Image (cartoon, rainbow, N blue to C red):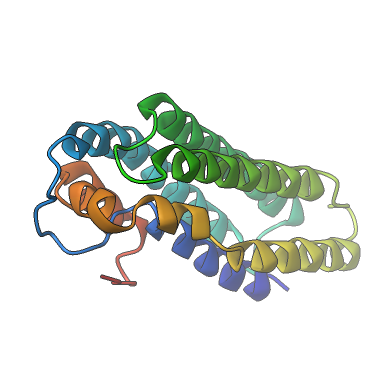
Length: 194
């Protein structure tokens, strides 16, 4: 019953990699991007760690031996933490303003919109989890299966706007930031992209 949820959570970790600036470390041509990248990376890094910690907590509690009420409690808190983290990332990118690149404002607005949508989706998963019947093991398993399917769908959701935001010189500027490098490492040590 819980294997699907755990597998779906693993897929969700991929989403945070989009913001971890896992690109080449070559220097950016435009030093005006460095302060922007530092501001964003410094604000995003704790949120990436929060998402990783929430995923770990949910996975730890989501075993076949766990009581339904414990699984529900871990899911509810974990999904809320992830929702809050994506919302904080959106706020950080919004606060940083548009990067000084072609279409910077559009790229920034699209990334903020995408992160806010992810935040809302995870908040909704938390509500679904809260509504599950923990008194009946079979009903709970069925409900958890539904949550896992939603989570799986969510983990396949495109992060195109985030990728677009950190393409080119923005990505190079972000790759130079220590906080983005550490965000990448904490996001998913098993997955190395870039």
